[in-house]
Every structure is written in structure tokens, then in C-alpha cells.
Image (cartoon, rainbow over all chains, first blue to last red; front, side, top):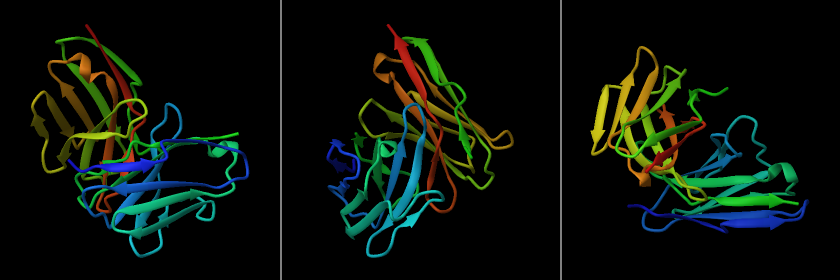
Length: 114
Length: 111
């Protein structure tokens, strides 16, 4: 099946720094990728839709200047958490898939902001 | 506003028995439903799906039932195996491919 990777798998950073998370589709091309975040014992919440070659579309309540998304190629999307604060600590997951029926998820990135 | 709800946070079942996971939704625009399985520190993996034009879809040990009038779907796992122990997410989609997830149900299969 299709494989989606994320890097890094976990990151610890100081408050105020920026963190970049990469999402790659390894064996297929994805014009659309999605970014989710998950708090403990809660559902995955869609943050934004990343479209190759165009601006990302953000869900209501998600600060686009805080969470910068770049979809530079058909196999790579990046999420940058700018000026991270402890409340940004979460599990971030990306997914990719051109089919409506399925999205292939990455393994996730756990971010801890001290 | 949570449009997809899984009201049972956990389920414990004996190996060999049936596991039944439930999911309710509120958005009548949803017309495609999926179940995902997730292990700790991993992303969800697709399990089974159903279109709103059907009321049942079966794949091996997994069967999903859809009751549109009740806005309810369920996942049956028969027989349950130890490897089925994981978190199961229900998800729903409308025309825009975006997925709305429930909070998940943790299934523990006892030997």
C-alpha cells in the first residue's frame, strides 16, 4: 500500500522557537495533503488542506500565520509551527491521498514545547 | 462542534468473541464513512469503508453497518483477535474529501 513518512517523529524545543515537520508520500504523488493534530484522548482535528502549487486552506480557528504550510512538490508538504509555545504541544499527523475513499496517514510527529 | 461521535471510549472483549464499535454522526451531508485502526505512536491505517448508498460492507472479519435514518454506523469484528487491540476511529466525509473523526474507541482483546 501507499506509504507516507513524517520527519521528525518527535521533537522537543524551547518556547519561542520554530519547528518544521515534513510529510512525504514515498511511492505516489499527492496533489493534496492534510494536516491534523491530536490532543490526548481526543479525535484528530483537521488543521489545513495543503495543495501542491497553491496556498493551503485552513480550518476555522487555525492561525495560518502560526502554522505555515508549504506544498512544494507532489511528494512533500511541510508544516512549520512558528514561535511555538507550550500549548502547541501535540501530536501532528499528515495524510495524503487523491482518492476520496482513503487517505494514507503518516506515523505522526510528537511535539513538546518547553 | 463534534460532528462524529464515538460515545464509548473503551471496549474490552474476550478473544474469539465479537467486538461491536458504535459511531454516530450529525451532519446529513456526510455520504462516506470509514473506520481506521491506530496503534500508539503510529498514524491511523484504513480498515474499511462504506458509502451511503449501502447499508452493509464486509471485508473478512470486519463488517460495517450503516443506518442512515438513525445517522449511526457500527463496526463488527468477528472473531476478535489479540492483534485487534488498538484504537479505532470512525470518520466521515462529505463531497470535499475532508475527514471528520470521532474521538476513538480503545479496544482490548483479552486472551
